[in-house]
Length: 203
Image 1 (cartoon, rainbow, N blue to C red):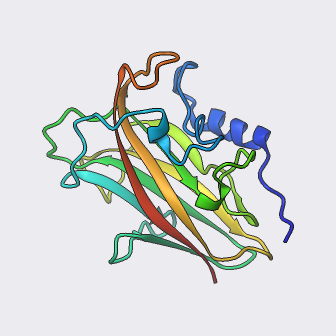
Image 2: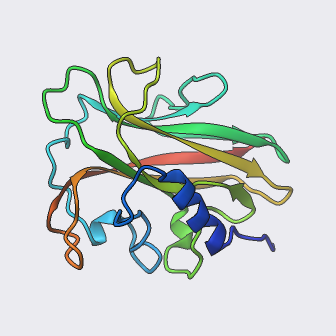
């Protein structure tokens, strides 16, 4: 099976577009995972105050209907008709009423575990076209589904090509505050790491 993967330039351009209000020194997700790193914790520590699930928001919504794609078992299912495109919102943050200081920036990346260790900048499954499978966004988005919450809502459009097959992804996210020390990513930044399983289904 031969499928064209998203190019490095396209992903980098997407990240730049995705971060219009972020400082140039922002540390983008996937810097470490471009090698053999299985997740963000190869460089960072999960040492922040947001490690509980009570106030955590980690959801994927259909952008048109604003309905959650979360399943009863905690996974999310994204179904895309072959040859068509579907846009989803990845929502990350803390619910209203949380007494902890809110994170200031959230990072995310969708990873096909089978791509870990290869040289491709995209870690999305082959034969699926995607525009922004990773990013780092400042907290402050507003959604009616989560009134008063401190969240980021990141749009991602996915297209199932003629050769796309069902796949399993890991959605890796970090809620963060502060900045990592250059050359010492385990210092200077508070963060908490979470993972969720996402099913990609061709309809």
